[in-house]
Image (cartoon, rainbow, N blue to C red):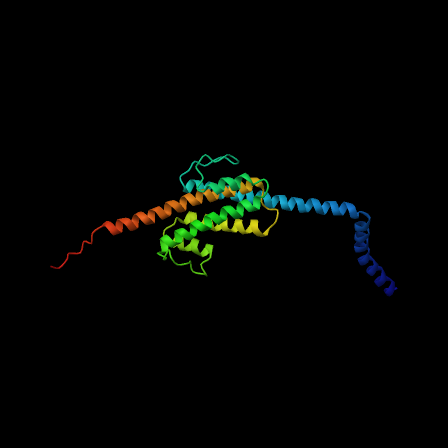
Length: 214
């Protein structure tokens, strides 16, 4: 009697996994379609997430640059910092990831130029090998770049990496938002470098107040 109970309990344990496998086989095509839909929902969520985050950084960049904050999807009324940004935005429908990578490359070049100016590097020498873009952003923060700009540039770097390594997460509109944000940060970095140069020129022109011994 005890053996019969044990066998019965064992069969109860097996019955539901068996039913699950049987149903999966019977409705295989339906399960496959459901999985495709779930993957599409996840991808769509990632695309919307990228677009929203890029829009937030674009607003921050335009505010920091002193520009009018544009409505989502509006054509920029400000002059682009680099003509190539306009060309990049025009191909967002065909290759949104390329727009993100190309736009960020322009910002990276400006970050390096700002680092040379702010840190007193010799312009005739190459940048230090271990100075990554994120490290240079932190250095610019210590050199006086507004901390709101530092935080946003770090987030932009993360979005760039997401576009490079996570396929299908960038919409055409998300790429345009990112390019507009890059344009704003190029304006900000240009202003930052202008301030550094003006300060250096002023220091060079101000006479030394220390009395000279005759």
